[in-house]
View 1 (cartoon, rainbow over the protein chains, first blue to last red):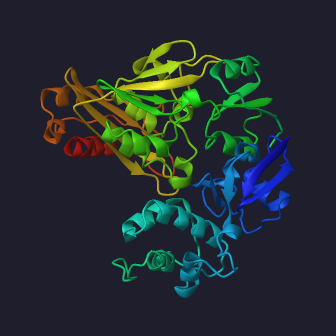
View 2 (view 1 turned 180 degrees about the vertical axis):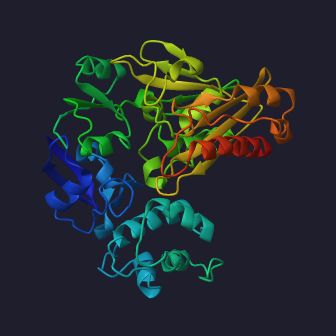
View 3 (view 1 turned 30 degrees about the vertical axis):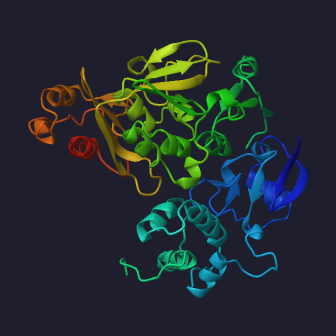
Length: 159
Length: 261
């Protein structure tokens, strides 16, 4: 089947089978390998992207279901001049990543949260990251990065 | 996964025509179906996507009833079912944010996972499941684990909830999957209190009639004090024994009553 969508603001066309997952289409079809496939069972959140502004797990959605949609991946998060966005820079500044495998999903989940709640509480951040698993950081520095990106102090109760 | 034809109808009639092929299956949010297809536990010849049918989406409130289109996502129910706060809160607690942006109420009910949240709300509310051919009372809809009254080729189009005087849903989450290890929905109506339990029984969602009688007499957590629920027929798995789940049912029922609003 032919499909057409806007990915990171650019119109793309491609071919996909019915069973082609959105994650596979982005990675193999478009070469956008920033979207990671961790568990492939909808649990780890490394494949999180935005479809029509909403965060979804791209391993649990067929590519054809995004036909005509606006899709944003981690490659679409940087500033127009190629520098890191505020949120990405906060992850770097607060050591919100170690191996980095979960990071694209974490950034996309956090971006969706900040659009909905511009200044979330620590509890809201932790609840929102329910579906994103990180095995390196213990989450504290990810939460700090998101607090910082939202313009809030990073002192946390849980430490 | 095995390949299949992908069908995108724009109307319910087109969907039903595509589903006349008995090897075709409806696809809603896919948050359960896609993982099972990846495991090759399921191999439909065609998937008929219901998410492109606008008539199946949205929340309508009228005169004591909230009607939710079957293809409405959990996130939209959480945001829009403001007239039934306990239901909105339940929807906002399913899975995680990404799952809530895809998964739908109709998909959850048709799947009838024994640990899903929505069946508890539907059964405790005495809701009506509207399908492509008829209306089914909640008490007649759920038919054991992963089984419902739906016939081959029949799809849910909406669910109608009578809004209770007070209600709450309490669940104890299995921390990895965030499915309910046990969940209890309590709803108080003028005619009496209904209590529905998910996640606990080998037969799927069920009503705890002793608690309903006690709470209909006195709507207070203390009314449950003398009651106990048998562990017979409760699920045992690596997350909890039957006895543990039976105990949780009573604890969570009490908490739901205490927080009902």
